[in-house]
Length: 288
Image 1 (spheres, rainbow, N blue to C red):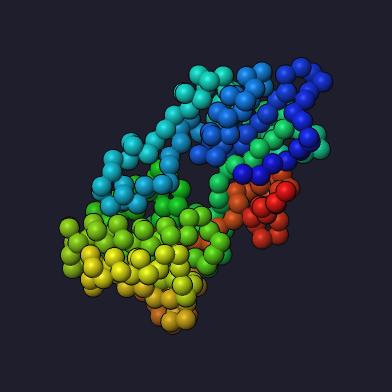
Image 2 (tube, rainbow, N blue to C red):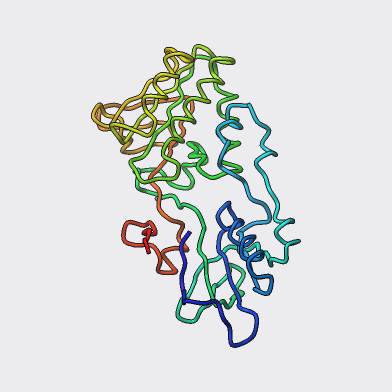
């Protein structure tokens, strides 16, 4: 999470202090609950960007057909019941000087304190050809909901013997082990349903989190089903062609049946607009 407009104490000349939290995911929802418990007099508003939250943890088990997607969908009813105002429009701007957050519909919410916890944003165009439109054919599935289900449907429709490409970006990105967890669960699905198929991981790194554990498990459980191509052997994806479902690296072009492109990321756009993201696109962590 990142904060803007902070001072030593939460006070307001107009009465009860107003705290606005941008982002209705795990961090934002936890924050507003904690604030209400710490001080029931606070006026707390959660800006969610939607009426429900689609979780990313365990989404790969949905993709592999091991979990019902409804188990990853959550409402904000309990948060509203705790006395938190829930704004379901997206936050499009934040002004730390005026201490207001602008919503997509035109409303502006004043605050005494602002917490920004909007999750990650995709760096569209960081991989040549990978745009929001391209993601409808080559899903990243790095946000919950429709992208998760699109990848699941593509795997279900793929003929046995098809190639599944999973790309992994250079760090930093959300949840470093996740591309390899994703590949593992796709392999689990293929082993049970389409055993002639294969998962190819194209990686922009030469090593990754928990590598020895993943490779040991792959050898034991999915021999021949998963291949990892590191950066030094041409694993970095340089461009994609959605129309022909082509994934290109410096060394080779691939034409998979299913392409799960996990692109480079940054903090969500509202973080930069509020002035809490640095030139890397991420919010620096400060130690006190």
